[in-house]
Image 1 (spheres, rainbow, N blue to C red):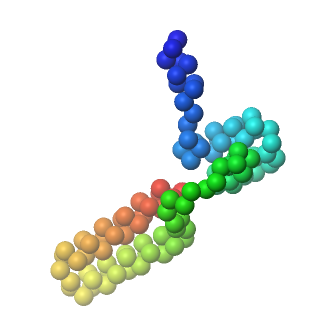
Image 2: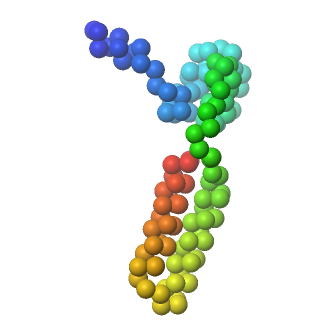
Image 3: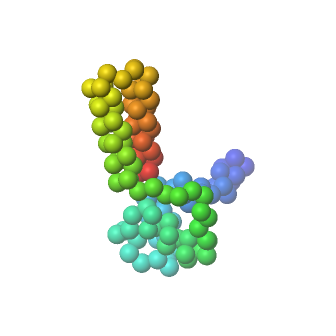
Length: 109
């Protein structure tokens, strides 16, 4: 029984919660209106505002659109390198950069 109590006391960090969990949390607070129409970022901002939590600037957030544009540019550069007959190592570097950017878009979503 002591294990259950410890698990209940540990609260999941707001940033790690899903949108559904954040909605439930916001509805339980009762001070936020229009929870069902909000996305995750809006829910986080509203909850933090009500609780008085100030945002910490850990790192600059890059938009999904910018990441996708950069990935497309890397893929275009890779195709140019293939057409120009560049060494395989250069082509692999461009391919890996494009893949990293693609992975960042998945994490940013």
